[in-house]
Image 1 (spheres, helix red, strand yellow):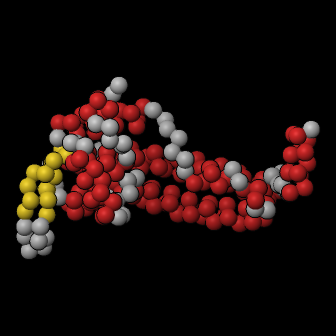
Image 2 (cartoon, helix red, strand yellow):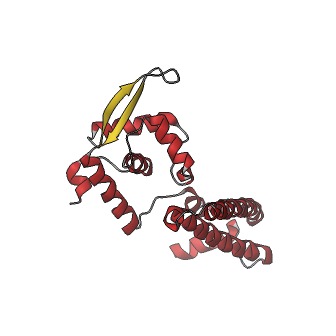
Image 3 (spheres, one colour):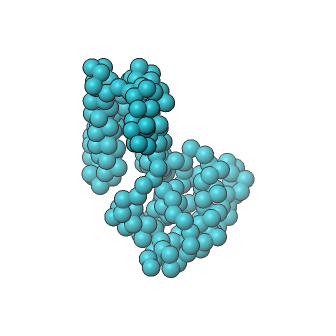
Length: 207
């Protein structure tokens, strides 16, 4: 049993881990947590677009005893804002989550492989069009990642702060290479299918 499961039955998530990671540094109110995640570029790997989801995650962390209210303040910009701090149990859980996430591959059931498993519902020409759109989007994403990394390097940021960018670049580049190969096979006809061919395969499998 890990330290995280001993401390709380809380189901970990990237957002919960990010909140605990930010609060490791100093107590903050939710808006500041969201702003810090975006300033550090972590919103590329952690979804903090919906502030309501952030508040809900913090509430769950508080119920689990991983964060606690430090103080409730008032000012002109925020009529009432609650400042949260990480607890000892939260520090233990956060480090345990990071260890588990880094060491253990996990099937996260992304949409793209799921769609690929039913690609035969499209005809090859339609699939080629959609793959082309994805390849174009991946090229744009790759350019943005590389541009962001170049800017970070100009600021002299240590490599440890950009490991997620390195990973995203490698994964995006690998997917793009694979996709370009599939597009080439669709173009030359070495990858093709039809309902008739699939029906024959199904009948031979049954026989």
